[in-house]
Length: 360
Ligand code: PMP
Image 1 (cartoon, rainbow, N blue to C red):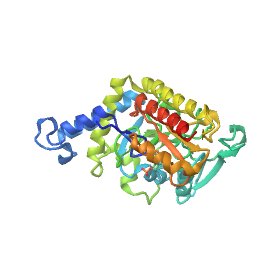
Image 2 (image 1 turned 120 degrees about the vertical axis):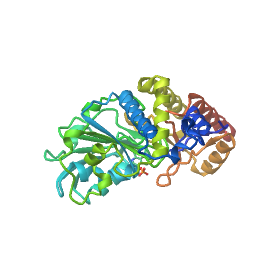
Image 3 (image 1 turned 90 degrees about the vertical axis):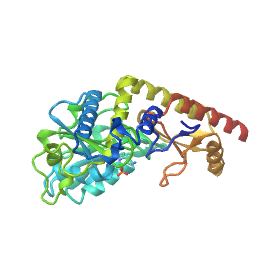
Image 4 (image 1 turned 180 degrees about the vertical axis):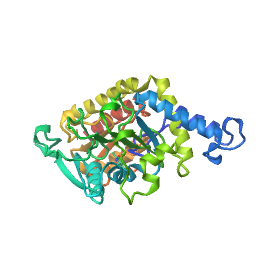
């Protein structure tokens, strides 16, 4: 579409084919004479679109029938509150594994509604971030659920294995959903803000096992009541219709690419290329222990941080945009979600080598 490879962590780039289709039918969707964003969410064509998107997501992740799939407002942070409100009674205990910024923020929010217990937190060993072995976790046997973030977007820390715990597992998959196959039946609840691997911001997807919904806490806002939203087909209130439409296009695009199996191979190839480039040089470094390196968000630092601004400026001139690390950690970060082509990572690694040579 443009000559830019956009490495933004989110809102992130979407597949070019999807953007072109959206552009083409922007003013006149399916010949109805209006944009899809201008029609009622309760109209037959929109309900059909909504059902198709849900079905495509169910197909992509093989979501069992005893799970609701909800299309909600409020982003990832909205779910930080909705999860405890729906899955635990007031003041009940819930376990949180904190492996970076987002799971820590989830714990802080949850403490308003439940007693959130930090079972373990990521720490640096010999300068590299790692997650303590599960045998060292302080798990609470009475926890209503166990919350974790399989991929920490800011810190670039990914957990390779599903935790082995008895409480229902809640996973914040905002930055890794649809990047590889998962066994949904092993989770109680999965949620994700859309703006990385699903579509534009404004939408969050929740996949929740129906029998975990025993009634929300009394103060739960109705729009965050999972059982109610499930009953109403996520249309208790007006859903983010345009974001839902675009998510549907992304799901169809994913199916055409070969689904999550194809994405897993695609994402592994990109990540290997980038980490190899970092590891081959003393000029760049990544501070995450190898087993926990993220395939989606690759933070890296220049050994000489005084060159950061120059690196970012020259990268931008080459059409490699949004490489600045999160404001809380600095350095660089390349987010390489499903929509990032291999050619984008190739262009980035070529630039990195060239930049290093030029600073020789
Ligand atoms: N969780 C994760 C893993 C995220 O990456 C983000 C946002 N980048 C959030 C939660 C918060 O999402 P939102 O800004 O949509 O509330």
